Amino acid sequence: MCFYISCCCCVSVLPSKFFFNLGQVKRPLKGVSGLGDIAVNIVGRGNAKELASFNLNPNFHNRIPPKTAYDIVLKLHDRNSYLGGVVTTALATAAALGVPSHLYATVGDDQNGQFLIDEVKNRNITPNITVTKGNTALNPVMVLNDGESASGSLVGVSYDIREPGTRKLQGSKMFLTSSHLIRNPENFNVLREAFFSATKAGAKSILMIKDPLILKECREHIKSFYEKDIVDTCIGNKNDFAVLFNIDRFPEDTLMDRVVAHARETGKHFVITNGSRDIALINNKQVTYIPPERVLHSVNKNGASNVFVGGYIAGLAYGMQEIDAIRTGSKAAKEIIERLDPTPNEDIMRDIKRSLKTYFNQKRRLSLGKANPSTTHSTGTNLANINVN
Image (cartoon, rainbow, N blue to C red):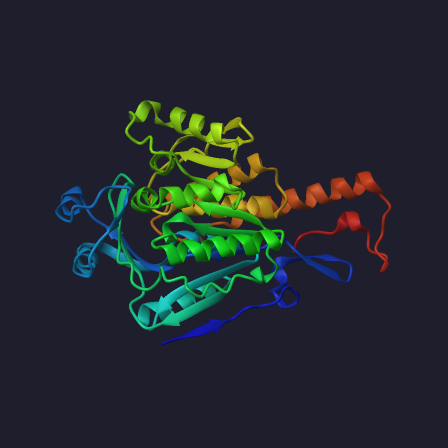
C-alpha cells in the first residue's frame, strides 16, 4: 500500500525569489524537474583501517547489507544526517542557486522518510514524493583525513520509481535523472517514458552517468538513451564513462583521452569530469576543455559530482553559454569539497548565486539596450533597469 504526497506549485504561485519583475509581469527562470533517488546521508569521520574492515572501496558507491550499514554508522565519528541522493543533491544545489526545482521520488513510511520530506521542503525544492511501505534508503559516508571517502548504500524503497508523475514536468525547461535508477526493465521503461514526456514538453533532458555496477549490467539500455537521441546531454566522470564505453581496462594515465575519443566518435553531447584535471565538453564531435576550480583544502569529496551537475543546471537556467555553466558547476563543487556537509544550501552558495544574478542582469540590460535603449513597459518602467530579485 502506498500513498502520494503532492506539494506541487504551479508557476504562478512559486516563491517570489524565483522571479524577476517586468513592471507588473512576473516571469520565472528556467526550472528543472528531477526523477531520482533520495536517501539519508549519514556522514562522519573515520580512518583507513576502519574503512578496510568493512571492505569499502574509496570514492566508490558500495552496495551493502543492512547490518553492515548500521555497523558503519556506529563507527562514524562526529556523524550527522543530511539530505542525500544523486539527483536530489543536484536539485538541492540548483534550488540553493535560485532555480525552481521539482523532485519526483519515493521514500519509506519510516522516520527517515519523513526527515527527507522535511529537508526537501526546507531547501525550497517542490516535493512530489510517494510514501510507500518499507525502509528509506540510507547511505553511511566515511570521510578520511585527506578528503577521500567511501559510501555504502542500503537501497530500501527509494529506487522504486513506478509512479514518477513526471508527465507535466511543472513547466520546467530541464529534466534530470540518473542511470543508476535503471535496476530493472520496469525502471528503464519508466525513465524512457519520462524522457519522451520531457521532449514533448520542450525540456532539455540530462542523464547523469552513475554507478559502475549498473553501468555494466545495463550498458546497452543506457547507451540507447543517447544513441537514439532520447536524451540531450550525458554528464558524469571519466571512470563511470569508461565503464559505460567498456574501456575501463586501460591504464589510468590514458583513460581520459580514450573516453573523450570514444564520446567524440558518437557525435553526441557529453560533459565529462576528471577530478582536478580539465573537464571535457563534447558536442557534435567538437571537444572543448575547461579547467576546474582549484580546491584549496579537500575535506569531503563525496557528492561533489552531483553538486557540479546542480551548478551546471543553474548556469543554464540563468541563460549562460554551456562553457560558463560548466564553470559554475565547478565552482559549486569546490565549495562542497571544502566542507564536511555534502549537501549545499543557500549560505554556502550565496556568492555563486550573486554572480549568477549579476550575469543575468548584465546580459539582459545589454540585450535590451541593443534592441532599443528607450524601450519601456506599458506601466512606464524602463526594461533595462529590471533585475532578478
